[in-house]
Image (cartoon, rainbow, N blue to C red):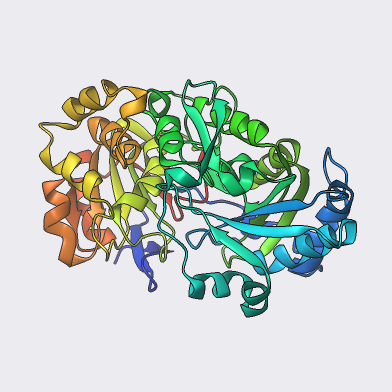
Amino acid sequence: MEMCMQIKLPYSTTGMMLHLEDDLDVEVLASSIESMPKSDKTEDEIVLEAMENPIGSPKLSELSRGKEKVVIICSDHTRPVPSRHIIPFMLKEIREGNPDAKITLLIATGFHRATTREELIGKFGEEIVNREHIVVHDSQDMDAMVNMGVLPSGAPLLINKVAAEADLLVSEGFIETHFFAGFSGGRKSVLPGVSSKVTVLGNHCSKFIHSPYSRTGILENNPIHKDMVAASQMAGQRYIVNVIIDGDKKVVHAVAGDAIKAHEAGCAFLENYCQVTPQRRADIAISTNGGYPLDQNMYQSVKGMTAAEAAAKEDGILIMVSNCGDGHGGEGFYKALRDCESPAALMEEILRVPQDETKPDQWEYQIQARILMKHKVIYVMCEEYRAMAREMGFLTAADVNEALAMALEEKGRQAHITVIPDGVSVMVK
């Protein structure tokens, strides 16, 4: 009997075993964040130490002196930011600088739905939700926006009035790789966090998404990042506390200070642990979306698929292991892929869309079309939505071993196979 290597891939809440026979040519690309030297400090102590040593900025207590309206932009329910380990310390330090400060927690929903009270309690705890003034941003409510000027892209910067009228604007967040903004965190609290739909759609336009610099881990020359930095500066975002978390969503590192400089320092730190370099490009690349909660739909799964795209040869076969129990995740996304003549025809159509006519979900199906133009994609997903995935131009399989057998049938047993156990946690160089 053939010997074989087994890798447990994240899939829904259960995981899925990949069996690789010994005669196969396999390499595994994984983030080394878990191998980071373990600190003896608690999560609270890691955050407090960063706040004691702000990068490129006075301490938050100094910044808050004489500032009446202080706004803390907080992440929403879609982000695993451990706010309980950040917000209490930011509130305390602001009040040390100015006991009379009127503080608002402004929830940065970006383009997402409103965060519920239950979700806020889950994020902050009941005491903060009952005691503090909280406003949930709504990108569709144009009456709640203030025009701050024109971004480098030419799009208007319309942000939430609460942020625009603050005497001191600060934010919390976390830094992870992002498949078109380079990294999350920092300036993203403003754009898309508390910006209007007009501004978000302008920032996510087809021309910017098409840029070769709008990729995971790239900040330099990235037009999306450039607009976001300008938005941060125009809005007066003065100070951030951003954390880096491990696979268990625990704080392993934190940065605090100037909104741009502290964020850059956090990105540089993370890059050391998440950058991976393949020995060579793959004939078959296998990726995941990190399991639940990120693999609930196909829309979100584009993110993990870009890691396989970056690791594969131009005609390589991609295998995406993502449960997608909630289906496609976006009606516009689904219909664009289902109804197009071909991914290339869809891409042509998208690139003709002017910046001020960008449609919701357009960026997601643009990236998906880019991948499908060059690669066959085999989706390993729940049975319920496999027929729908095939309508959208994907092949499907019941499990990863069946998908690998399909790919080997086409590429041969000499194929170079790259396995990326968590496609959302790596930067493939």
